[in-house]
Amino acid sequence: MNHAEEIWKTLVRATVDKKHPWRVVGFSTSGPKGPQVRSVILRAVNTGEHHLVFYTDRRSQKMTDIAHDPRVALLFWNPRSNTQLRVCGIATPQASELIVNSLWARIPDYARKDYATLSAPGDALPDGDLMYDFDTARANFVVLNVKVLSLELLELKREGHVRFRCELDETGHWIHQNMIP
Image (cartoon, rainbow, N blue to C red; front, side, top):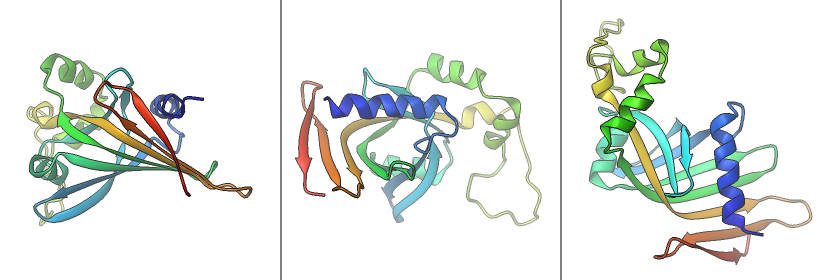
């Protein structure tokens, strides 16, 4: 059984099933202000490139953190199967404007509003009213690729926990290692 392949299949399922528990991901960075974690939505999976894809605002703290240190850690949890997946990788913004524009075209108007605020995500809201500029929304939209370098799965089972790690080698193959839970 190829554990890495099974994990990737599950990650792909999480992008199409809006109720899949791995759709909402804990996304950790380490920036100038120290470690930070937040929840993000897994938008796509590119198994050939070993990329996980997320959307974010270019003005967000996570982008500042990634500019400081592109190494990220992600945490997936499935309460139905008592399965935790930890992922380590390198985050980079998608460089192709063609791809970014194509994905932006699929964003519904109500969701585009998230990228149209005049102030950055996390800024103070002194007057209590959000102000928008829809002309700048696309410029704030970033497609973030995370190149996965390692996967570590822990499955909690009554009959005995299971833990293993898969590391990507220099040839692009996954090296599997069983671990003590």
